[in-house]
Image (cartoon, rainbow, N blue to C red):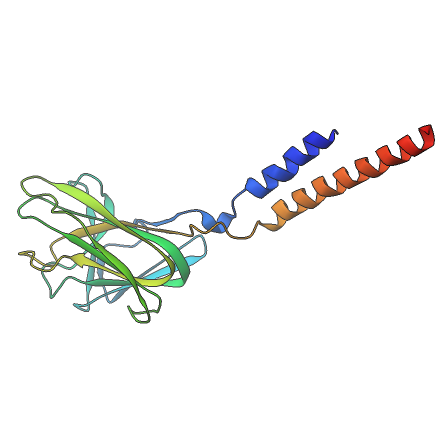
Length: 210
């Protein structure tokens, strides 16, 4: 193999992202319909544990709101309708989609924290523009911050019917480049080792020719 080919192989290995950087989707479709104190779902080795300020979370099927579907979470006008999601390990990117049938304007609020249970360092928040007034619809809010262990999501302060929004598609991910996986390191070492071998052989050939 030519040196240029080995260099290309090594460069390709460096460009391969780690699997941990892939997005993980919690869509709640595997959670049975019912009322829960805590909704727990594990996807690709990451666990999300979700509680509600009201003490109860309703999981039910929903198909009439664009942008969400299958099993969704709702609080049904109880308290602030505030949900807290804890993650079993830190993530860097979180988004959640909220939707309603359009009887009023809804603002979706998302906040991130470095500790479990919305504790530790406050890492930032985002509130959506008004959604869904007049017709069924949904909106997605997202945050990017290093070391997120928990988030809170709910309808914004001042909305007429807190807890009336259906939530679905909690998505998390690691955006940092991270360290290449073992397979990537192996490819790089193989490439660099081959380059070194070719260089030594060429020097030996030049020395013998002289």
